[in-house]
Image (cartoon, rainbow, N blue to C red; front, side):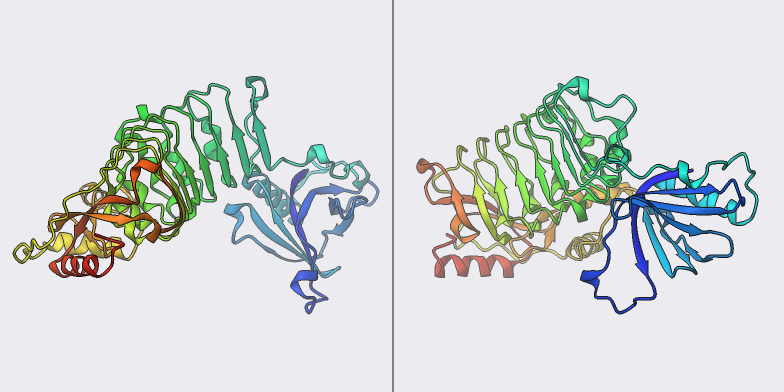
Length: 421
């Protein structure tokens, strides 16, 4: 039996070797074989660093086998002589099958017919045998009929008129980049949020505008802590779900060339956001929470922003009523950025949390709040601003206030600072 995997060889006899001088993990072939002459079993390691192969005896030579992370496709085999640790990482099923056979070999439960191949019959790893980590598909004829390699880290499926996401992609747990631009995809499955390593998702130039609100549940799950780039441009979108504000680690967000009239109220929660574009939409006002952002680039050109908006200056309502216990609890969950889903909390509470309003101070508010429109100088939140010449230098923002204190502070700052008016 042989498997393709990534192996890092650690020499325990050299514990003081600096980390930067140690051998790095490399694509390898691991094989368990039996010598037909003396009928002893051994493990062979072939890699680009050792094309002739390294032989490790198995009989009374295993110090320990570490399988704590076997469900992630990782394990470590420690040998007595030489003092080597083989840190193995590969496909979960392959690694588990390899460990199962290794256990049977050590227990003497393997028949001679199962492993009759000598060490010479195991061929060294070749480039064509190494599972690819990147796959680019630009023609229908290039689409894999037997499924995708499990080791894929980058997958590009572009301009082949795909109407739906292949379920095989949902099994690529190592995937970091997924580019599905220029297709006919109308919605993404909820299971997409289980790709815990996904960093970039590009679904531009598709038909996500046809998706119902329930078909945006893929925004939940593990994506809130991993996704850095999201491109939803050119999708004829009429709305963006409020759940978008849960993607706290987004650094790049593209919403250009859609039919958006409003943006999610909690967009200011994306505090790591650096590049934001929402040009060529129908926006007339931005959420007040956008004041919390510190961007490098913002592009909101070709929208319908008014030149000035009533700001309600000098209007101070009566003291707000006391919030309910449910609202106080929900505020605490969102302020602490505690992850939640329909599986962890009652559905009614999840829906309540998803549609929160956000004060300019960053705190959530639900049924108890104040609301006013202000004007914001975009250069105060972004180093580079792209806008049409006729749009002017200010943009109206719809502000929510969780208390009279926040409203008073905002009014005071407006009079002292021309950035907000």
